[in-house]
Every structure is written in C-alpha cells, then in structure tokens.
Length: 424
Image (cartoon, rainbow, N blue to C red; front, side, top):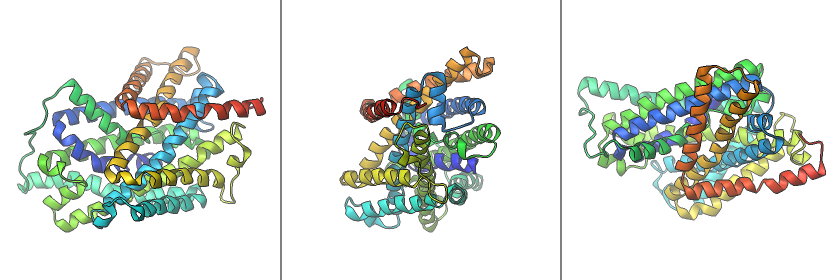
C-alpha cells in the first residue's frame, strides 16, 4: 500500500497532459525527463535515508525540525499541507478535463462542471473518513487501472513499429537541443513526479516504518520514472507534432490513431480515473499533516480529533472545503487556464519540502546523525541543487504565491507557541 500510495500520487494527471507541451521540444523533452528523473531519484534516496533515521511522525515536520528547529518543521509542514489541498483541487479539475473528451459540455466554464469536480473531492473525502486501510485499498485499485494506458502506450508503440502500422518516429519541426529547451522540459516534467515522498508523510500510520518507508519511496520513484520516460516519449514520438498540439488528451489521441477511436475514448476514461486515484491519495495526506501538528500542540486540539475509523475528520472537512472553494472561485478561468495556474502553485509549494529535506540531510550528515558515504553525500547535494533549480523554474508568480501562503502560517505558529510554550 505504501508503494501504491507513492506511485498512485505520482501517476495523476501530469503524464496524460504533458505530451502536448513536450512535443515541440523534441530531444529536449527526452533529456528533460532524464534530468527530472535523476533529480527525483536523488531526493528519493535522501528521503529514504531520513525515513530510516527518523521513522516516527510526519516527514513534512520531522526532517526540518530535527535539523533546524520546530519552527522550520511547522512552516514546511504548513506549506506541504497547502500543496496537498491545492493538488486535490487540481486533480479534480484534471479528472473533469479528461471526462470532457467523452462529454464535451464538461469543458465549458460554468457552475455545473465546478460542482461535479467538487463532488469528486467530497466522494474521496468520504472514502478517507472510513479509515486509512479503505483509502489504501482504493489506491491499489485505481493504481492498477491507471497503469493500463501508461504501460499500454509502450506496448502499442512497440507493436506499431514492428508491424509497420505507424511511420518511424521523427523529430521534424521540433526545437534543437539547447540549455533553455532542456530547462523548459524539466520544469514541465517535474509536476508529473511530485508525490514520491507520500509514504514518508504518513509514516506514523505504517507498520515497521524504518524498513517499509525507505523501500517504498525508492521503488515508487524508480518505477514511475522509468514508466514515464518510456510511455510519454512513445506518445510524443509517434503522434505528429501538429496533432498533439491540437489535442487536450494526448494519450486518447495516441490510442485513437493507432488502435481505434473507441480505444481513445476508453483511455480518456482511464486518464480521469488516474486523476481521481491521485486525488484519493492526496486527500489522505491533507488529513494527516494537520493531525500530526495538532498532536505536537502546534495546532488546536480539534485537528487531532479522530473518528471511530482513526481518521482526522475535522482536518479532512477543513482541507476539502478549502479545495472546493478554490475550484468554485476560479472555475471562470476555464479548465485549461485553471489547471495551468494550479500546477505552478502546487509545484512551487511542494518543492519547499524537497529543499528543506535535502538541506536537513546535509546538516544531519555534518552532525553525524546520518551515516555518510560518498554516494549519499553526492545524492544529497544533487537533490538540494535540483530542488532549488526547480523552485526557480516554477516561475515568479507561482513562487510568490507559495511564499505568501507559507508565510501565512507564521502567525499561527507564534500564537500556538505563546499559548503552549511546551509545544515541540
């Protein structure tokens, strides 16, 4: 279930929407995938070692607090909580966007699609209110379904090339390889790789976390990275550039061209399921982070209150309400604009955990808390550099939004410390 949580949260909407934006970049896209996957694997190794050394509690708080101070842990956990409920809103929009291939009226800006997206949020909130095991079961089921189009694209691509059903792949009309092109591609691919750390965030819910969490984190990051590289590259190379640029559902277009129009419709449905499966996983995370902070007396006690299924019901209601407000308040932008805006904000906010996590590993290495090897030290430095570069690559507007929303947690932290001096 920990592997399914990590893989399921990574395989959401990003991979199904990326080929359209990556296609014009040509070889830059393939190199960009390599950069993003390498950076993510470095971070996964770092988080795995931190999870082995600090297996208790929520990683979003524990790693920063151990290396720096409880205030750092609180701010990182606060920013990551924000990224969770914003990505819940993003994935709900992405699910409706994919369903609009089958029902075009869902692509119109208006109240009806907004309410359907909000309904998806509350359905999976209800699933999570029945406990972690039920949420984990839903994650396993949706992971199996969402892997079908991802792996299927590679199989269809190999078959099409072998049988001559498709022309040889070409990079005609794409941009030449350049540093700016690779940077643009790597920034785009980063969103698709968010979520590898999901098991670390719920480590206090896991049996034998010091062994289970590190393995699950590395396995999820490596498996999804390889699948993305093969699958997304296949779609990008085997569908004409002009066709991809005019498609809102690249995988559905790929299967419709190489298999049948009906297959394209089915894949659009699977892409919607992929977004909903990731939504389920992030709903789980959005509930556990404030719960952990409340247990540390850094948020009001109500956020630590569980129902009979050990689910933090007040936290879930608050988080899903915030996600719903974002969807409804911004739906006038239309699906495409709303999704693009939410992706940037979510990415830049989540990266704060990666930057502080890698920095924490560097500090704990110097203190001798973590056993140091040349390879791990190199991975830590590479992960930190990659995180900083990715935060810069997310853009000024998204970075400003993420910093402002994160800073909003400071008054809460100061007020809780003043009211409860023993908080830690």
